[in-house]
Amino acid sequence: MNQYNILLDPARMPDAWYNINPDMPVPMAPPLHPATLQPVGPEDLAPIFPMPLIEQEVSMQQYVSIPGEVMDAYRLYRPTPLRRALRFEKALGTPAKIYYKNESVSPSGSHKLNTAVAQAYFNKVSGINGLTTETGAGQWGTALSIACSMFNMSCDVYMVKVSFDQKPYRRSIMQTYGANVFASPTDRTDFGRRYRAEFPDTSGSLGIAITEAVEAAVTSGGALRYSLGSVLNHVLMHQTIIGQEAKLQLESIGEYPDMVIGCCGGGSNYAGTAWPFAHDKIKQGKNIDLIAVEPTACPTLTKGIYAYDFGDTGEMTPLLLQYTLGHKFVPPPLHSGGLRYHGVAAQVAHLTKLGVMRAVAYQQNTCFDAGVLFARCECILPAPESSHAIRAVMDEALKCKETGEAKTILFNLSGHGHFDMSAYEAYFSKKLEDYELDEEAIRKAEADIPKVPIPQ
Ligand SMILES: Cc1ncc(COP(=O)(O)O)c(C=O)c1O
Image 1: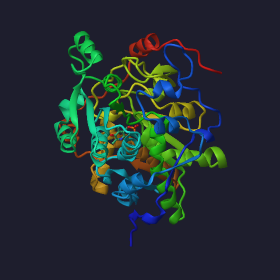
Image 2 (image 1 turned 45 degrees about the vertical axis):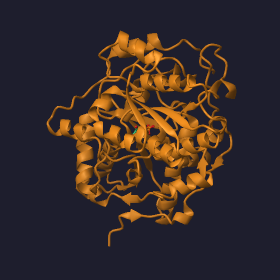
Image 3 (image 1 turned 30 degrees about the horizontal axis):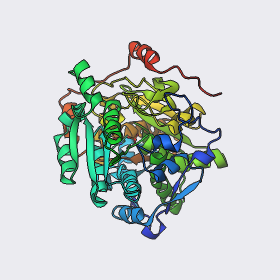
Image 4 (image 1 turned 180 degrees about the vertical axis):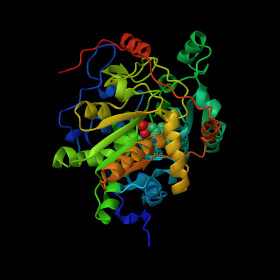
């Protein structure tokens, strides 16, 4: 009898998030205030985030307890299944063993709810009743809308214009949960108005939407705070519930991965899956290949510049040491909206720089090829973002076919693609364009990135 699903007893669901910061082989460089170039303090972040999240951002505690109310919200859909992709393995004819965490079963359809619930909760207990945010593909906006409705909070979502147009039903689902959704750049913020005047035909970007959402929070007279769906340390930490569960599930069948693979936009899905294993690599010397997968249209880790840069286009956020294509970079309108971010989480950049992990980049058509094969085998329609991970898994499994190695591969299926059918339609009708970053974009990035010395 084939064992497809490896389920975790709900009583064994981890009750703490794993914080990788104390385990970093070399400490990370601090975020800097753009005006003073000094490390930012809690008071600088207080108009944007509530204090418990600021404390998590700088915490050096290895495990941070998950509050009871967040655990209770997690129990709606966690532990998520770990599945052996037996049918996919068979189709590839590989001796590799492929396992995936299925985060697409969450009520929002992706991993994003893991941090949305936590962020809404910590805002609520800090007396905040409304949040602003950006969304690319709409997965994050959906997750935060659900979390805000759970905690009876308002939710204003600045949705990147190209996704707003491509995915009308994402908009409707956010509205179902009570959110207000705006196509970014909007005329609701100073920055949005200025950007539209300068670039009337813009398709928008996550960087622009972040500026608008931050501006809306800081000009709300204290009523609203801002919530970010990726990049920051605390967001990545909330996602470690994925990797921790996966580890217990693999352990229950006597397995341990040789490779952990995840798609990477801001880095939260990848880090959430990989960091509990990065811990074993750093602390116990485990031989494990950690691979982040990004699009060639927005190849932050594979072609970006390692530098201090802003997290947003309007230069409102602190400077973070990261790989970046420049905060003014507007990625081409590829269909993986969640991977269209100019930068990446500082933790991911740091561990890439140190060689603890590595990154690869793929064109979107080849990712859809893999995603469609996966769907036909596993009967789950992957989000285009997740298809990037599937492509890399497929290539690693095909390498195993050549060498005869039976490697164990773990990846995270970060979300389903039920709201991405216009992307699938473009793919099937051969209208999906592939994009490659050109040299001019790199030169522009070099010019746009602030000249800030990197601590040695
Ligand atoms: C399904 C899915 N996977 C992955 C990502 C990438 O984001 P991150 O790198 O923060 O996980 C997104 C972002 O929206 C997403 O919707």
